[in-house]
Amino acid sequence: MIQTRRYEFLVQNTPQKEWIEKRGILMWLAMFFIELGAGAFVVSSIVGNQLGMLLGWLLCGVLGGGFHLVYLGHPTRFWRMVLSSGWKTSWISRGLAFVTLFLGLGLLHMVLLQWASPVTGLLIAANIFAFLAIIYVGFVMASVNGIPLWNTALLPVLYLVLGVWGGLGLTILTLEATGATTIAVGSVEEWSRIFLVAFIFIVFVYLLTIRYQGATGKTSVRVIVAGKLAPLFWIGVALFGTAFPVGVAIATWVAGLSIPTALLFVLIILELLGDLTLRYCILKAGLYAPLIPSTSYA
Amino acid sequence: MKYGMVIDLKKCVGCYACVVKCKQEHFLPPGMTWRKILMSETGDYPNATKHMYPILCNHCADPACVKACPTTATLQSDDGIVTIDQDKCVGCRYCLIACPYQARTYNADEKKQYFPGQGPTDFEKLGAKLYPHQTGVVLKCNFCRERIDAGIEKGLQPGQDMEATPACVNICPAKAMVFGDLDDPDSEIARYIREKKAVQLHPEFGTDPSVYYVIN
Image (cartoon, rainbow over all chains, first blue to last red):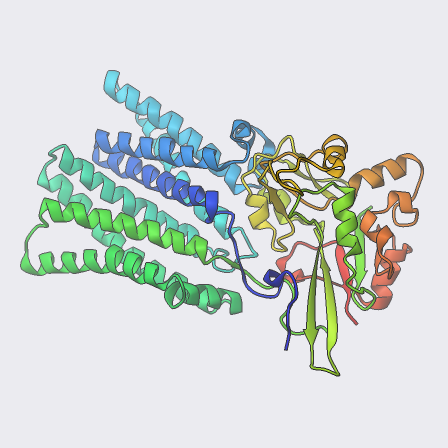
């Protein structure tokens, strides 16, 4: 039997804390708002919803970028992340470049849209960088090979689905707010349902894959589904973020009715809450494998 | 040229001299250690055995931290030593998360003192002049880069001459550590690794650590 005297974290699974505890909470929020904002911009630009584009741009730039900056130890040096050659290997550097280019091109497109004739190429470029802004966080985390829960190619896919799904929800909200036609709202709603199914499938496959990826991965999954994060996961992600939207979608589909606006608003808020909760769980349950094996070398 | 270290776990007595010397050498703030020692016990009295595991930055040949750094503040020199340029570090802590060995520390609190409310000690005042650490940046073991550089300038040989060798290696009363050039097959460290069949910690991470352990 081993009795550790000091640095027990080295013989047990150690949770990462830098990006979720204390000021690390800002990273969690930054990741959420950057992907949500970029997703809303992409979806809104496709359906021609200017308010959604502006809201997405603001969420990504002001909240996402703002939280990122406030988190840094030296925010005034942030320019080094783009202008240094770090982009060759660092996903954070690449991500900041994607977000900066998306924000710049997106703003230019919105300005042209308002006061001059828009350029299609500009919108396409803005959307490409918005798309990259959605998925870069997944790559940032997937490249950390010390944390099995993150070290999977499924994470960028999951975050892509979350970003676009959240973007669809925000687009519906803004379409409703601007009094758009029922047809426009309905088509976005249909896509939202497709992404809801994709979300359920990917979360299931993701957790199942990690479950069989060694002892540390198994522990991470257990922490999420049956450990201290279980209440958050089952209430926030499974109930609010998944079961309610699925239940309402099935009920209205069977009854052949459209979802009342007020209920739609509530469902989208719950979906976003589920998105935020799942991101929290993934960051919080990120465990490092023990450095020293729990059995003696002797 | 690739500097590395081998730690003979059979010789380590767990005296913490290396940890304390490192703290002193680099004037580390309260609560921060660049070296750590894990101790464990196996078996029951009278057959109990104590084990020591000194842990430090592995100065990997293919370091995850260098790849993760968005500002190129974390650098690897030609001799394999991985260092941090504090003036370039933006404090994003991605390197800290990317390091599978958890060898890095974030220097968050500028007001941290060894005796809070009583002002800085002479040690802290001296450290602020000789070896200043910025706050809001990540810090870690640098294999006593400054000692190696100064020693080489004087024509000394790192690993052989104490003045050009990391402080932790010099201070070890059990001589449990050997420092030197891993690329030189005739160096003491290369021979030690060969003869004692020293191993890297978690080679499966694929970073090719330059710190080896003798376990048998």
